[in-house]
Length: 175
Image (cartoon, rainbow, N blue to C red; front, side):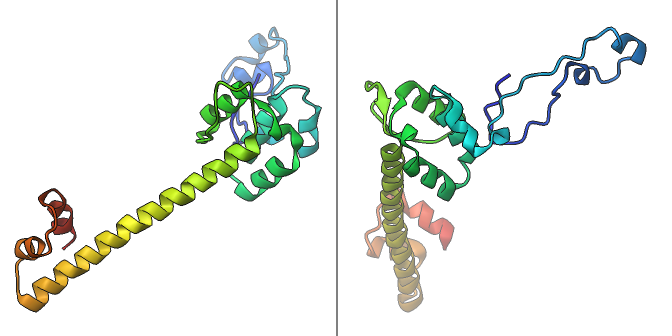
């Protein structure tokens, strides 16, 4: 059984554990097979290299997805992440909710580059949002100054400052 989450497995690991309220006499007829479980959190870091396919990098990424520093270190130190099948990279995005961007027409993906590109894009988005928030904050302060200094209503202040009619409701909500 394959468990593709970064959380600890809390389900049964033996067949008999699946029968909660079964009588002991009946349970004696059920063989107690062990369930073979492949869960990322249970794999020691040195064992990920034992996988001969991209399952190793997939499971290692899943296990470390919430620890950005550790994931970054693994990605940049492990050469296996430099050439991952694009299907595996897509699966990583799907399972972990990552927003790695790469050319799906390519057979292989350099995961290190994909992570670095995602971080760069996130920083640019943050800067852009910061600029917008700065402009909005300045406009809001200007509206308040005009209202207080000139004793204008909010509507009059926004008209004086030439704030577009479409933008006015969001400022009214903040006043």
